[in-house]
Amino acid sequence: MRAELPDVLLQWEDFATPHALPILERYRDQMLTFNDDIQGTAAVVLAALSAGAGVAGSRLREQTVVMLGAGSAGVGVCEQIVRSMVADGLSEQDARARIYVVDINGLLTTDRSDPDPAQRRLAQPPTAVPSRKPGRPAGLADVIDAVHPTALVGLSTAAGAFTEDVVRRMAAHVKRPIIMPLSNPTSRSEARPQDLADWTEGRALVAAGSPFPPMKIGDASIPVAQCNNVYIFPGIGLGVTAVHATRVTDAMITAAATAVGDSAPIHHDPHGTLLPDGAHLADTAAVVAAAIAQAAVADAVAPALTDDQINQAIRRARWLPGYRSSISGSRS
View 1 (spheres, rainbow, N blue to C red):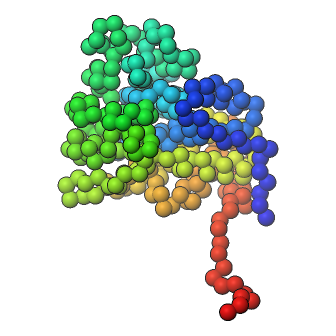
View 2 (cartoon, rainbow, N blue to C red; view 1 turned 90 degrees about the horizontal axis):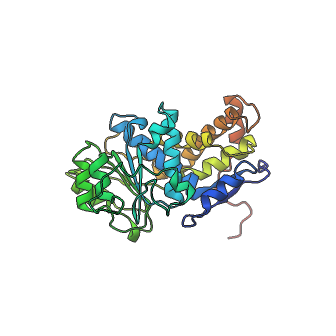
View 3 (cartoon, helix red, strand yellow; view 1 turned 30 degrees about the horizontal axis):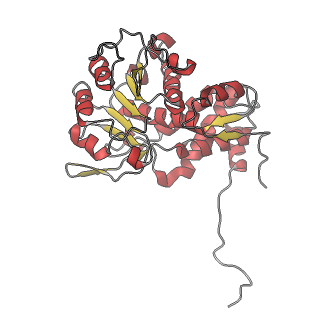
C-alpha cells in the first residue's frame, strides 16, 4: 500500500528567473513548497563544500567563498552557506563577510544601484576590494587577489570564466582549493576539471555541474563529482511524505546537505569524490529522508516521532521497483 502524499508538495524550478527567490519567500510559510534550483542546488553545493572543507582540515565557518553568478541559484547557495556558517558558530555579520558575489558587472557592493533586494543582502562595502579599473566594481581576479578564497563556485553560465590566471591566483594562497564550475550544459561550464587539476598541480577539490571524465593526476584517475540536485530532492520528497511534514524549513535543507556531505567517499578515500557514488542514489535518498524527517520533527512542522518511528515511516512510504524473475502462465 502506498503512503498518502502530503496535502501539497510543490517542487518548482526557476533557474534563470530573477523573481524566483521572492516567490519562494512569499509562499514557503503558507504551503509545503520546495524550489529545486534554489534550495536543492544550495543543499548539494553546501554538501560538496562541507566535504571539501573536511578534507582540507578546516571547518565550514573558516571558508571564504567567491560566487561567480548572482542569479536565484547563486544567491540561494550563498544564503544557505551563511545559515550553515552561523550554525557552525559565526555571527551572521561575520558569515556574510566571508561571501563575495561577482556578477557580469563585478563585485556586488552596497553602492551599486542595480542589485535586487536579495542580492543586496550579499553586497560588500565598496571599499572591501580595490578595483584595478577606477569607477568600476572589482572584477573576479581583483576579488581573488584581495580575499584569498578557499572556495570558488560558478553559477554564471559564463563558459571558461575560471581561467588559468584566476585559478593559479587562487591556488597560490590555499593548499586545497575547492573549485566548483557548476553551470550546465558542459559548453557553459566555467572550467574543465582536468584543467583545474593541471593548473593546481592536482591540489584542487573539484565538483562540476555537468558530467566530465575523470581527472588524470599522475598515475591516478580521480572521478569528478557531478553536483546534481538528484542527491537532494528525492530524499526531501520521501522524508516529507513519510512524516507528513507541513513545511520545508531551512533546517531541513541544512540537514539534507549534511547527510549528503557526510556520505562523500572522499572522507575515506583520497581519490574519492566530494559527493556520494551516483550508483547508490537510492541509499542516499533514504539517508537524506531520515535527516529531513528528524529536522522536520525538531522544527515542529511534523508530528512528534522517535527516530525508530521515523525510520519505520520511511520504510512504509518508500517505493522500490521489483521485478518478477518469471511470469506464471506465460505462453511459449
